[in-house]
Image (cartoon, rainbow, N blue to C red; front, side, top):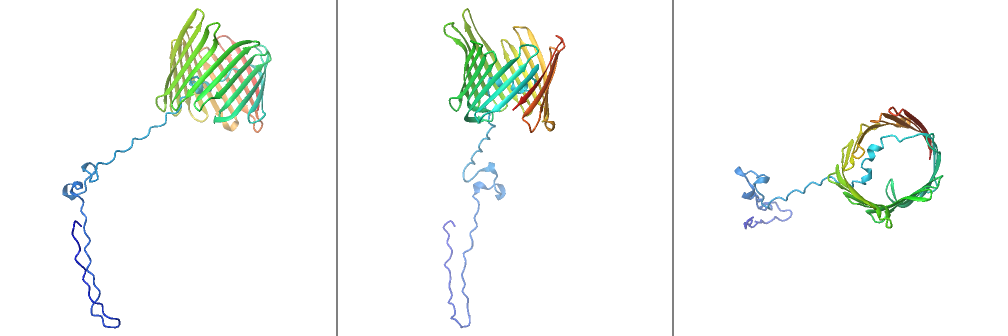
Length: 355
């Protein structure tokens, strides 16, 4: 190498066939050149230099930064305390029968008969239509829901997906022949944020309106921050209330806090294991000068097809609801009892759910 060449090869005559061999074919081979590393890449004593001692091909390319965990969508503002609230049992009294019938993959009806001991008995008919576009196991668009009782009161709701990230909702509620609520929502769900605008009971003639704006932002994969602003206007009165919210989600627990001019609402949810879940809620109202505390727990017994929920609050109330499924029948039995020691009030309920 480096301009040097091998000396010419020398040949000797080969003897004829059958003749005694006097000489052999010989070839002088060129010695194999030895390659030496450039001096710039050798350290002291001829050793190979490390990464920090230079490179003949130039500096090494920097490593690509590690990608962080995806932030994810923070969800809607109304669902910040959902996990904690699902641990608490629902109030029950009297006897209730719920029958659900699925007519097709898009249509289902529900009949509810409630015989109450504290108020008049009632009957509700509910119909639900679900469209073809499904974003998740519990989200399908469009969705139309209507519920009417025996007095003629109607509660209707329409959900529609305008675009991939924009959802709209309309809610109408009547009491017999009088409109009580008409509400329109628009929600934008990004990769790491959610913005919602709600218009409630707009009345152009009466110059009254309720405007609610929500915004949530995923700061990290576990921390969500946001706020809510409620603006209301009617003749002779106008005002706005600002509320700040934060939610931290760990592997087994979730802590949520809402703080505003009207008070504070804090909740804590903890999943101890597959069978036990607990939740704690604290609500403070500055206008009513009232503070309440509640502790709830949920016990799952999958082998017995049973779920028990219980609660204990600062108003000296205790209660619990036991749900039992009867496979292979599509029947669920629920039995609940609630007692208020302070008011000396007790009521219990029993329900049968078919479907």
